Amino acid sequence: MVKFAPLSVPWERRVQTFVVLQWIFSFAVLAQICIAVFIGLLFTRFWIFSVLYAVWWYLDLSKPWQGGRRIEALRRCVIWRYMKDYFPISLVKTAYLDPSRNYLAGFHPHGVLATGAFTNLCTESTGFSSLFPGIRPHLMMLNLWFWTPFFREYIMSGGLVPVDKESAAHILSRKEGGNLMAIIVGGVQEALDASPGGCKLVLRNRKGFIRLALTHGAALVPIFSFGENDIFKQVENSPGSWVRWFQDRLQKIIRVSIPLFYGCGVFQDSFGLMPYRRPITTVVGKPIEVQKTPHPSQEEVDRLHQRYMQELENLFEAHKLKYNVPRDQHLEIC
Image 1 (cartoon, rainbow, N blue to C red):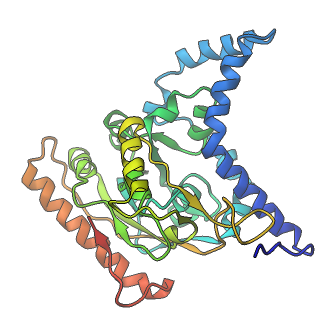
Image 2 (image 1 turned 180 degrees about the horizontal axis):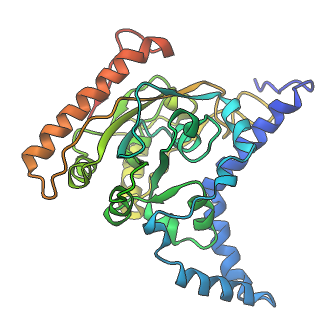
């Protein structure tokens, strides 16, 4: 039976819903709409706008791979506070980050839409700059979105950068320090396993970020976001099912996973594409010191990778009881 929200819902709660809805819309269909508008304008009397943007785009083509273009006013916009309060989302500091150093953070888990990663690292709603003064966060995102007209400007404004070596090298090699580059290590593959109560991470064979840290001497920071997997449910897609077979094949073709997720509705709580109002707590672990090794051997990569996994497990075990994770539940690293 569908349960509709009462008419007496406070206006602030309604604003929270609207802000989260626009965010889902932004990352679900806005890129496609931007492409359609860019092409469509060429066949109207306003064609000059697309032509002028194309010239700007050409001149600015490399910007995403050079640290992007953060706009602090947008990162601090009041709408993100409403998004944070919808769940709510909070950020927890466990160790000091020296602003004279650069850091490479592994963010876990991906969740369906990486909600915790975006809110904590691409906005100031949870007070990242207050908790870690002098540190500028960057979040890596699939390269293809930075080839999308107009949309690229939107995602760069929050500190999003392409997920590749060139982009990483530009940020991690900054001599003045004060940069934290976060990678959602499990990526799109991990998103397919995001379900309430799940703690499955795609990490065991993901070692590229470890090699990056060694190459640039960037300290590794494990980050775990409790509750990230609890805000959406997915259509049954266990390994071996026809749904998972289709998702895996599609991912290989377009390099983007498509989780068949659902949650609650805008005006009712039974079914829809809105996330459930469940808390997300993102815990930033203590940095792992890394000695700069321009050409690390596989043995050095494996050793640091093993230590990173151990520190991540320690972080999870130390905090899980505070955030309603059963005592007998542990990370499943695959």
